[in-house]
Amino acid sequence: MIVATLLMALATAAATGEPLARSPIAARDLEKFTPDVASYFAALDTEATDKDALARKQKALESLEKNLLAAAKKAKTEQPLKYLADWDVVFEAAKPENKALKNQLGKGFVRHDFTDVWTERSVACLISMPATYAKAESPLPVIVALKPVLSLSGEALEHKVAEMATAAYGSLLETHIVLVPLGPAIKNNKTAESAEVEGTWFTEGGQVTFFTALRVLLEQVRFDRSRLFLDGWGDSGLDAVRLASSFPSWFGGVINRSGETGGPDVLYENLTGIPVLYIDGKTEARGADLEALKARTDLHSEISVLSEPGSALAPSADVSKGLADWLGKSRKDLAPAVIHYRFGNLNYQAVHWLRATDTRVRVNAKPSDKDFPRIEAHVDKGGNKITLETVNVPSLYVFLNDAIVDLDKEIVIEVNGKQMFKGKVKRSLAYLLENRYRGNSGDYGLYVGERLLSEIDLNVPAKTP
Image (cartoon, rainbow, N blue to C red):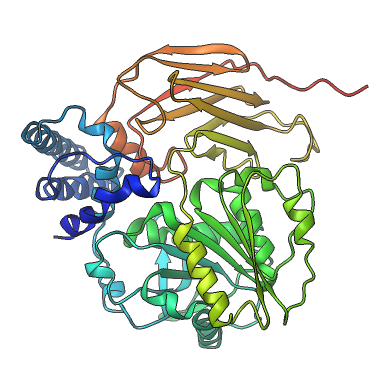
């Protein structure tokens, strides 16, 4: 069974710095959870139209609770919901198998379309999945690549992007899943032709296309969420940095291949703990001032540089090895104890284990302004305390699990110097399932409870005389 093989690798998770704990529950017992998880999510899929969905959801929850209780008792462990590594793998293994992708394993880059059943929006992408995907001992890392504008469409676009992607990743294709969003899949009679995104990936249309393509991973592919990397090619290098700094919850690292590095308007401060790799290709000769980038006072992440004597889009063996080494050591902190977030997109107000339910924005305000909405968070694990400093965020959710604070103990949450909560939060299996399915936390995370904090002081900085 896939769960058994995936769990073998989790025994060494602590050695790699993973914050998620693994329980003593045997793999064969965890295997019993996956059908119920799949049934629960399937019921949620049809909840709005199927009158029997609620009963099926409740039946799946009761069966899952029964199996969880039996497995915990057998393993002589208490509070199984605190062991998040178990659930990370179970949720991935519970995804329904996509036969179209299964038939393309090891075949290089193939076109794959994803259609949102509610909006009927269809997005085309290229994906490469290793032949070993089905038998991998642990979920594989993913590289999501942003291509530049090529002024092509249909098969010509797909062939050119496949050629570029193969040159960019080479030997990584046997160890990594690579997803390259193309753009809308435009219906033409009975078929659909792939088109390019209009404008940059950082426009509203580009972001919608990007996150729709990302659902291929979230709904159809098992992957390691701590090793999801964003890679921008050439002119899309800055787009990758902008996307990662506006939506930092998703990425374990961001790569800029000879793109512009951007000015003060790029929110590098949001990349706290997220490493950045710049591949400096001589062919592209961007002449980026990388020393100035490293010296930015708002930078809270590690900047690495690989110098490529040729093109960053077709790197040499040495640079390819350097890229593989960087990918191997980079990993997203799934429960960061420090968060710096200046809202890069007010339509998307979630970052890691925080989500604003409201923001106050002055007309014509820019993200660089002192009164623009922002959140800073610090976790004192010894004191089981979360300290938040916010500006123009009157209410927010704090999502909780045992990787952030110890839920067996009393928790203190302080916002702008005022204590907003002191007490215990009960772990809930139903909450874990619902939050993962609906993506309320905005980071594909694992949370077993929450606290809603309201009537927060706006904490607007005083104007400078």
